[in-house]
Image (cartoon, rainbow, N blue to C red; front, side):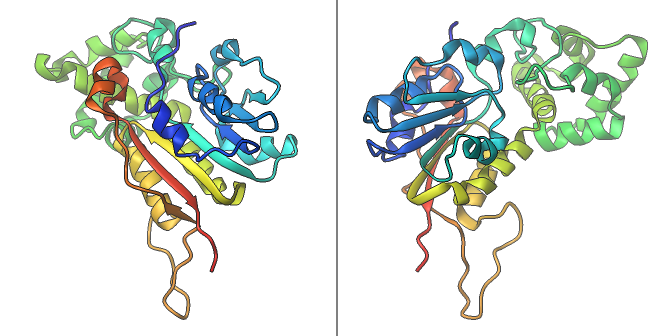
Amino acid sequence: MNYHNPVLLQESVDALAIKEDGVYVDVTFGGGGHSREILKRLGEKGRLFGFDQDPDALGNVIDDERFTLIPENFRFISRFLRFHRIKKVDGILADLGVSSHQFDEAERGFSTRFDGDLDMRMNQKSKVSAQEIINTYSEEKLAEILFMYGELRNSRNLAKTIVEEREKEKIETSFQLKTVLKRYLPNAKEHKILAQIFQAIRIEVNEELDVLKEFLEQTPNLLKEEGRLSVISYHSLEDRLVKRFIRTGMFSGEPEKDFFGNTSEPLQKVGKLIVPTPQEVNTNNRARSAKLRIATLRVKK
């Protein structure tokens, strides 16, 4: 099964400052590229846990006694690590977004390039698919999703058209959706606008931003002192959440100050934002929007 070339592979694994006997978690196992790189740097006593809710990822399991794959959504990271008797870890890596493999499988419905059922579920067992959202959500709710998650200014018009057209005929495939929205897709921008529409629906289907928030909130309690968090994001909605949580430990508002005017953010950032080199973007188009942020547990004074 052909999975993508891992983006920012060396940089994101370097960010974990791997200790040979450490315990690490790759919460987005996918094709296992980042996991293999982590295992290369671990000694015999080191351990690595991978999370992936996509059944396709199970075909990539690494045959290594130091490795355990947990076929679950990483929003449940603490619960499943506890099940494996792990309370604290030395590092956590997350490579967010959709894998190229998921985009390339037409029947998964993630891609604007192929015609396939409007599915977009990363976990095939989950109940809500893209088709259900497109055909049952109210016009108001559709407009909200397209605006919030797709950052589309004409979200109301798009939603109105979807609702009008689905009354004539159920919208079941990606090309049907494309045809329905044709008038909003000028040739020069068709790909960009479609990508934003599909992104919005996909985020709603998989609750991606809620999952990311739940995951980030658990990281300070999971990391050992000097433990590292390494997160690659691919669009501004994800990146803003990651950046803000590393800076303040919150997703909105500002941290409260104590009597002395000090705040107690759980994490502190390490180094500067890292983006791929032009060479990497040339050889791997998926890298073009990637941003890597690194944090460590703030040591209490």
